[in-house]
Length: 310
Image 1: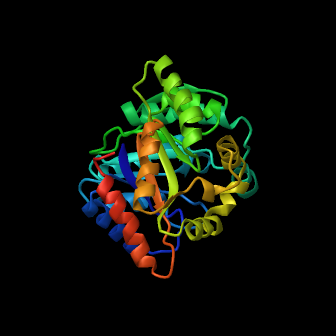
Image 2: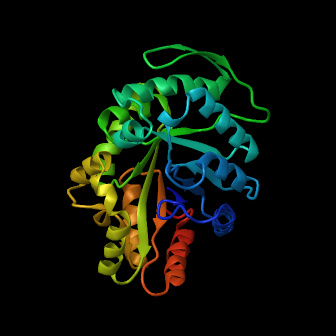
Image 3: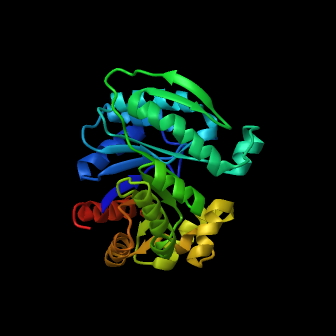
């Protein structure tokens, strides 16, 4: 199982220069991937920020987690992402998602009707543009006949935020995998992995990536750490899509699925995700206690030690 870091899930206010330095430090530590959320209300454009970080690094995979599809046409998304792929020398992974009904309808003023069908059709335009530079699609949402050419760009993996059964089927059939958020071990093992794997197999596609992203804190006082995570990420328990997977897990809120404990406990938890079928674990590190820097470093050191060993 690969080990990655999610930057920006906890804070979007730090400067682009700081972000690039954090990516470079993660590469130096041997972390295998960086995942950056695209928050429409704050922070940088995720694809652009990763392209800049790609110019300052040489090995680490750089991925979005995730860019909402309703905010940009698939032709524009393809060109933007291929440009980033060119800028970073072929290390990009595009994570995309539907976002949520309030963001799409109340903020953007668009329709959120038939979201899974919208994602399926979106991929029917995006995927061929990325793979071949050409597309000819007539559908319910998109009618696109186009060609695109981005110098020095190559095709890249596309993963989608898939939690519900229909979205997991689409992820397996027409994408390279899924990136989850707030899905615990029971949900990964019994709900996510069987559905996406079966869909990929039936479609004759390779085994899909199952990228599991969760808050993580290496801290001896588990109760203190979970309290901090509850304050930081509690709002996700009120969002419909995440509420569903938390209910599948049988927990009340995000703090209960977070990976928390001392080094031994956190390592066991991450290994359990590998046993459950996760192909990648992506940590959103939460510093806990009076010495935030030391807390952050304990978590980073643990992840560094797990690279290539899980």
